[in-house]
Image (cartoon, rainbow, N blue to C red; front, side):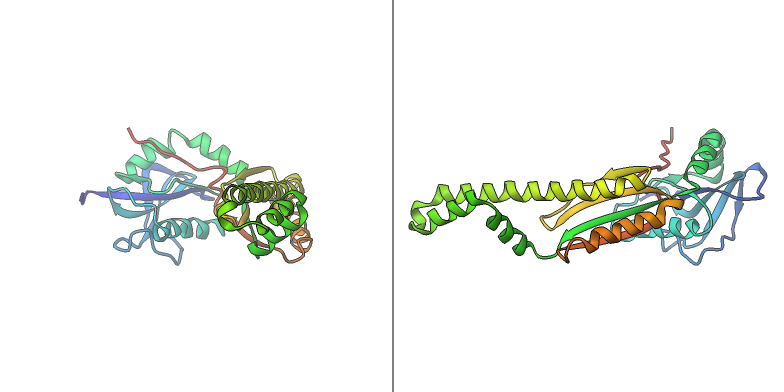
Length: 264
């Protein structure tokens, strides 16, 4: 394992009143009540070029595994900075060899790009929404009740011995699955149709397991946040308690702008 020192990078933001002309000004004091991603190097600092600042912590030159612990530590630092400044999150496990490399290979050559991106994100927030069915058994039962074809197949099966209904049981399973996927798609479209007009961008993410109905990130103008929340509450109220809505935000805008750095 390498012990060569490095700088772990979290995010970039605009530092008002800063005009650090010297390459790689490092500010050792950062008013965040958090530790960095590596418990061995807890202190956070800033590497500054002109009015751009990159939040960093000491580390060694290594790649961090994508674990819940490390991912949350990375995100917590960014969320703390977000309380006071618009930020550009940096991709997880981005490590520079030095402060000078951050200035000369990142902040200085991409200065205008970062400034433009910061202006773009300054009046927007990312929020995430996941929707789950509360009672899957009830969902499947209702699908059977609503389908004459499935009910007829089940009645046919019930009148025969199990050894004679193998293929019929497979067909019932297939029909139920088709109805389930149609219902899920209908709900996804209904939720998206209601929320999309109040967001600038939407990123649909994969759903996992049968219970998850919807999974997406929304990029919302701050001035539209109240209306977005109202529509979301209306959707939840209209689900008759059958759906659970998990809403998180504001969160770092990873789904809509993430700084990726490829070292030569």
